[in-house]
Image: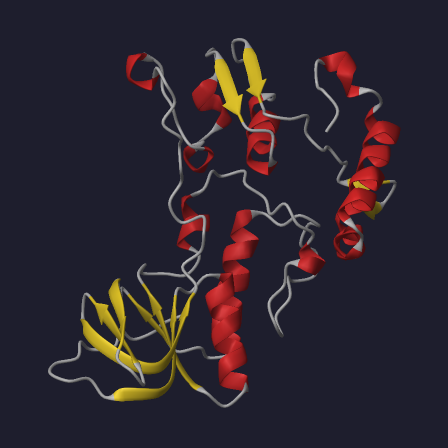
Length: 260
């Protein structure tokens, strides 16, 4: 997809009687599409030079952890033959297909530096000048900046401390002792890949016992049940997942994992 970078504004910018969407990730693209479908003039501001930049930067074996049928964008689906849990390259292609199909107005290379409300409109300050609009949608994403807590003793640790976003290749960790901190999707993604190479001793650190579910039971992708699970009371959903985990994996306390 090709998109022009809007020229910088000089002087007092004209007010867009519509919306500026900051960020061209999944949320930003979907929001812009909905606004345009509703007849609202919309522009998307994206700081990177291409779509799905965070997916481009992730490790080569990364797959979406949600089922393809639950991870589409309006009017655009994954092509036939895409695995149930798409590779990052398929996610990148989906973003670009969506933007091209709906001819979304994306300005790349626009860094938003500040937003100010001026009574009846918003002034958005960018690296190319100021832009004004009646409405602003901030869709910059919660995962843009990887976060590593400031643990006691970090300054004296002689090894490497990396975020899962910078996992790289599993072979990069061959022969090394590895501590994985966190038993969520990213933690177990790292463990899955580390298990394919000869590392030194590995540990998993987690506050609580993890909730583990198989990708499939028989030929049915377990994630297909997530819309139903989301509607259940939390206690009932927790009980259903715990029962499924025990049925499929047995008693994980045998492996040192406490109940979830």
